[in-house]
Length: 92
Image (cartoon, rainbow, N blue to C red; front, side):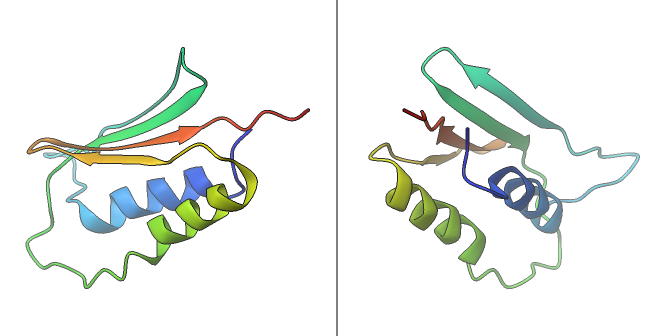
């Protein structure tokens, strides 16, 4: 009940932008909220050499949701985590 490939894009973004090692594991939490949303949240540990980001992945998800739903994709970042909340799409 989410747009195709949304979870894949969010997980790929988390891996692309963060350090992933045995000493500093990347934790990605995916869960469904009671308000008909799915949340993808990861801890922030930015890579030292920053890859240039075009933001196309997140823009793509937002555009897809605009086509199929009137509910908004929520993106938030704090000092220690990055979180994206995707609305579940109801099929009538």
